[in-house]
Amino acid sequence: MSDGPLIVLVGPMGSGKSTVGALLAERLGAPYRDTDADIVAAEGREISDIFIEDGEEHFRALEREAVRAAVAGHTGVLALGGGAVLDAGTRELLAGRPVVYLSMDVEEAVRRVGLNTARPLLAVNPRRQWRELMEARRHLYTEVARVVVATDDKTPEEVAEAVLDALELQK
Image 1: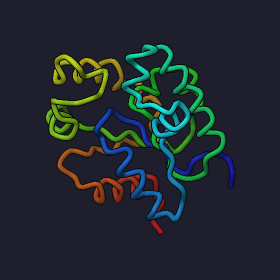
Image 2: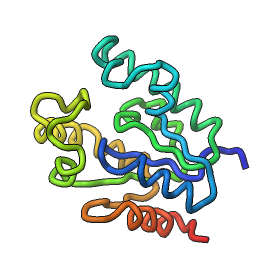
Image 3: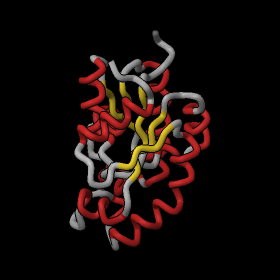
Image 4: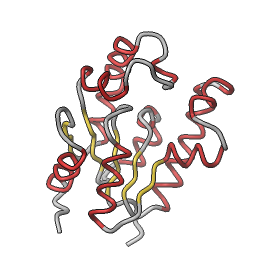
């Protein structure tokens, strides 16, 4: 079965894509992959450094390629960076796939991501910037998702369970 990932997780930073993705992979006996980690490994530097040194546009180009490679070559659980859905080509690539949008509200985001963060897009006023990011992205997450799973007040295990139930992948 090499027609792409079993599950693709999308959502904002801090929604639990990495943690839940690893749990899902373990539960399904499948490999786990994170496109942000792919970029860091390929570039040999953190995403925040790529943003600072080369700018967001350069990072988004790297991200597009990382997503394209992962969707084509990965058959397990795949987590995409929070902004991956900004690219129309990426959204097209995700059409018809088992995409799950992990959603959360701003209070949960602040609690998880924190206010003193090295996340380049939340550097100045994290609450306001997170709200603005979500206003710009929420409809894109919803557009690509087959299902939406709210993560507020849930443990990673509960979120993983909800994802498996929603996609009917329980063993």
